[in-house]
Image (tube, rainbow over all chains, first blue to last red; front, side):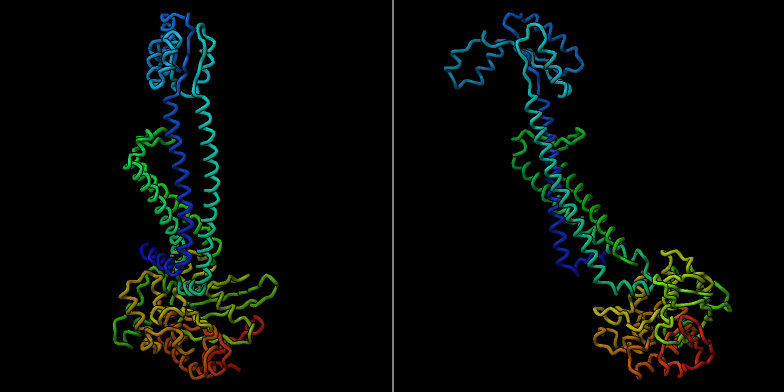
Length: 297
Length: 261
């Protein structure tokens, strides 16, 4: 195998222009692929953060007694769909209001604790439940109104989907372009070495001896290009981590699809490995297709 | 055969017969020594356009035999060569090499047989960017032979064809006759049982042809069977070997110590 790998490297070296073109286009492809992964993971991280913050706030009428609200709180806490329930009294709401508007003395003068309603802040175990809970709470006795972050989450999810589709489409196009470039490179290599393959056949070379260097060539292009792209993203992530930009965004861990939380540096390493494996796979599939189609051995 | 000859002729230890893997699926001398090396049995080859280039051709080649295949262009000489190395398959009939029907050899095992048949073509089939040494060494590189063995074998086969002094020359620096001798050296690198040559003197001058013929004769004396397709009457007449004449895809004569005419 090392001999055939060396032969593949020699072939790549002989076709410097093709090698450069392959590496540039495939690196571009995997930069977009990395962007796709990063968008997905960052969106997942942000969504997870939003979901943790998201809560239904149930505001009560002034004449609804605190004892009644606390009874309702206990009932809500029994609900399996509910994660936590926090009671915010009129006084606590006023304190919060004062803290938030401490630079607006005129506003503070016009507002007293009695104006602000008491409320219950309900967090659901599953953010999808918020809408149902909101509808149910709105019908309860003593409830003046219900608010929750549905719009924000919906809008976020919508734009995330649009972005994912857009980047996904660009990625699909680039994957196709990369595939085509590897196929044409291998095809050209086969045409240029037609006499060599004839000779190899005559002297009894095995299929493996002829085909493997061509396949390794594709694998090398894909693997090296994807590794470069992975390295770029890893450096960006580590840079953001060291500069403190991630912590200022409130990101300590990257949350993956399955809810798995990874520290930034682990994620960066994982991204390099993921991209490199995908690069190797793309190179292998492209060069194998080209060999099957164009090498008449 | 070749190994022992070279040991005597060159007074040097030579390692050619290391290609044990080549014998794994198609054991060397699998059939008894008295059995023919090659058997063509009622071989017919038709092309898609309906043209029949070989029509029920039958002949045998014994071990160590020298056979000329003669006939006009289009008589079917090259087709026999291509069928023998399974570059093409017969439409009907069978071709046996050392007791094995070559049609039954799986594609991935064909290299075992091809390493036992050296092939020389009129158009040389040589790599212009490689030196004489590299052009011969390629035959051994495909077997994963170690570098020191490649060096030794290449040196010896080039000595045999009289080209050792051109070891580091490139094809562009060689004459037609020298190029053909490089190809013969490459074909010998595997210590073949059979050397097949398709018009080997077709592209070279009479003096070079005579030299090539001497090389073939020398190789044949070492015990390697030779099948030479040619329409060069001087070559055929000089050696007085067996001559199989083809006409319109049929064997019209098969004569021991024959002549071209």
